[in-house]
Structure formats: C-alpha cells, structure tokens
Length: 593
Image (cartoon, rainbow, N blue to C red; front, top):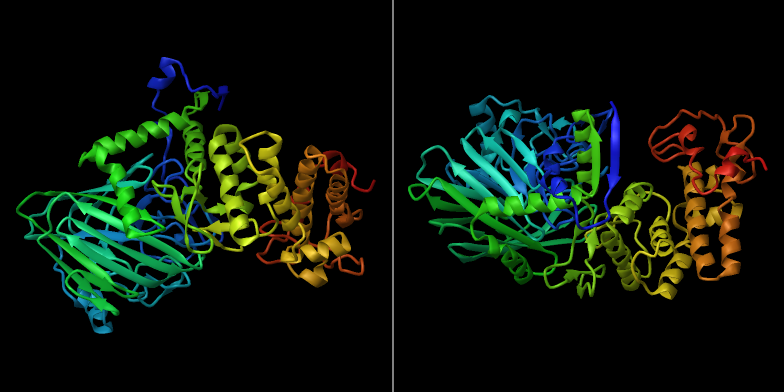
C-alpha cells in the first residue's frame, strides 16, 4: 500500500475537481458492526446518521447484551424494529428509543401481551429454538419480552445497503423494502409493501429496550396522519426522556393501543410497555413514507423539530441527497490519494465514524432538558451529548479540534453547562446524565487544548475554577493520589497504575492553563503533580508497577496481565500503560532521574 498524498483542507473553497469527488462512496458503515466475545466488538450501527446529528436511525436485532450495545450485530439474521437513537462505538448499551416496525401480519392483542402460551405457540409454529434467543445478560436463554416476537422478521445481508445518511433492507417474512434516511433534527422512513395485503401496519414498540428499562411511555393520537408521545427510561442514562412526533404520508385507516396501564382512551395510551399499531389501506398504495423527530423537552418541541423536514415535502430522496452532500462536505476536508481501495475505505469509514458523535441534544429553538432535568437553552452554541471522554480525549477530540473546531468549541460549552448546573465537569455524559464510567478527569484535557489553541470564547475564570475543582475531588482514588503521590493498590484495589498516569496527564494540562493565565503557584503545583508517575517506576522491570501505601511493590507483577478490573490497569496492561506519559517524553526515557 502506498500513500501519495494526505492533504488537510481548512478552506471552505475547494477545487471543482475535489467537489465532484464522491467521498461518501468510500465509506462502508458495516465496518465495526461485527466481532465476537473474547475478541472484541466494534459496537457500531449501520443505519442512517447526520454529522453530529440528533437522530441515528438504524435496525435493531433484539439482543440487549454487550455485543448489541449499538442495537445491531452483523452476525444476526433478524430485525425487530428500527429505532431513532443509537450509541456509537461504546462499551455499554443504551438508547434504541422509539422502535418502529412495518408488517402485513394480523394485528392481534395476543401478539402484544405475549403470554407464555402465545410465545410457545409461535415457537412451535415456526420451529424456533426456545433457547436460541438472547436474554438480558447477553447469553442464550429464555425469550425476553422487550421485543414483539410475532412482528420480527428475517433478513439477508445481500439485501442490505448502507452509505452515509442512508440504510436499506428487505424484511423477508413480509417482503417489505425498508429505506431510512435522516437530517440533523428529523428523519424519514420509506416502506414498500411488495405483497398484496388488506392492511399495511406500522408497529410502535415503546417497551423495546437495549440494556435500559422503560419507566413510562405515552402514545398520543392527534389525527389520522400525526402521532406524538414519549418514552422515559433508566439505564446508563439514569433519567432519559425522549419525546417524539411522527407524521405519515397517508391517512391511517385504524389505530390500536396495547398494554396501556395508566391511561387508555381512543387518543391516549400510557404505560411502561405501551405499544401501538397504525394500519393503512393496502389498496391505496404500495408505498408509505414517515417523518419522525425527537426531543428531550416535549412533544411540542418534537413537532417543531419535525417541521425542519418540511422543505423536503415527502421527497425521501431529496433528504437523502442533502445528507449525503453534507457528509461529502465534511469528508472532503481530508483528501487521501492512494492506490489501495481497501485502505481508502478504512480511512474514510474511520473519519465518518469520528464525525458521527457527539450527538446534537438541543432542539431547533436551542432548548434541551438540562442536567437537573428541567428545560434550558443553549444560548449561542449547540448542546451536545454522548461525551464519553475517556474514549475520546486521546485522539478523537484532538482530531475534532483540527477538523471541526466549532463542534469542539460547543463540546466545551456543553461541558461547562454541566458545571454551571451541577458543580462538576462531566466524565461520561449521556443524555444530560452523568454515566460515571471510567477514570481520569479528562474534561481538563479538552478545555486546556481549546484554550491553548484559542478555539472558541469562554469565561476563563469560570473554566479555571472548574479545572481546580475537578482535580480536588476524591473520585476513583484521586484523594490517595494527592496523599501518596500515586494511587496505592491496597487502598484503591483496581486500575491504580492507569489512574496515576492519567491523573498526571490531566494535571499537566491544567498546568498549561495556569501558565497561560499567569497563575505561577498553580503552574508549579500541577507540574509537580504531573511527575507523580515516576513514583511507580520499577527499576527491576523498567516498567511502571503498582505500589502499596507503605511503598512496597505489588506482587506478583505480571506486565502482560490485562483482565478487566485488575489491580493495576484499566482495559490494558502495564506494558501499554508504562508508555502513557505524553506530556513528559524525556522523563519517560529516563524516569529514575
């Protein structure tokens, strides 16, 4: 493989030849959707997405285990619905909210209540393996009723198509062609019912879950063409609220609600597992188009977001092409000339994935449900969510600071919004909740990078105060780090080497901000803290090793050992973490000095 040119374009004007190039054609969204236990997963989804957009419209297979963290795993052969939120590349599952599934099967209550006898009946009729389903722990086990067994469908990868902003598949059981696309705030579905049927139905499953739990849901029938509602849930995001609005291109012939527990009428249904079916006259047309939007604030805000799709009318292809153009505008910022088409696909797919998240969280009117779960406004910026900072501070955020400086600026504003509302910077933010995962206080890295590179405008006094406070908490052994000048194994129990070196890097970043602001005493303090990693240098092995609080070395020392939750490292081993001193390469070369 030979790279001839890699050019990064910062100018908005490009040569006409570059503009004609279809960079989106180099992207393969199926990359990262596979993997297996013990080897690893990409945990990506293949569906339609807009750069840093609000909606991720993609198929779900129905399995809520680790390998279904993004709702989809390439090794599966069934689809249970198409939902409008998905995590991208994370090690935990959540989201997959507002699941829709087209069908021509009869709409009967027993298929929604799913008694054991009904499930056994379906299993017997179709010759299914009763132990072939996926239970809540991600292992083979009993049927999990979070999806509707009757309305799932088999599919073949040969019928799947995916490209930036577009996904298509044929649902084999009913022979329905499904196409999905999305804009920044609203999405479109296009269904083609190839089999003649009296009724063509769309099933809404608000009880569908991916490693979270529905706490409340509501469906509101507003007219034969318009439905709104919400799904509230708890999971990685402790309190998540997703309001939705959907409009159909044709008037429905009938609508039915199922599993309503609190409110049940002709126009409203409420409950933790509420479902609905919207049925259309099969003699009118083979095609049905839907527009769908979501919001964290209210049904009315979801309706306002839905109106952003009005400019497309019911022209699905026009939205699809507009989103593809947006993806091309972003992807052409990096031009790679190579004679290796495989490497080119890998590169542009990686860039595509890098521009997928974080996700827009503020609505068309800039409002969002804040960290105290009350409506707020993102004044002068876009509020973003899914800030899994431990995953992104090393490479993703530095890339965005170069290629997407406005997005990176708004990420900083989004983090500072949390500080203003709760008194703390985020660690692993999701849907304006603190997920709490992972180590370090890497918001400091992003803030320091932005300030030193002069990306955006911020309240420097407030940002500096936030940095001081985040470095003085007692979270995950940070109190021991300050006391012993390393994180001791006998006190903290897990990941002590990783925590020490990552805290050192975070402190070095804070020191650079202090230096820039003329805070000499703080600069010296945090530079001294950034050297604490040397206290774990074991001259016997020339690697970093764990220590107990009395200064004795941790034994037995196995530098290749990387079991999850081990005493020394977080998702790595000491061979790897001994080299994580990006702020002090000379000190790493000679750490005994």
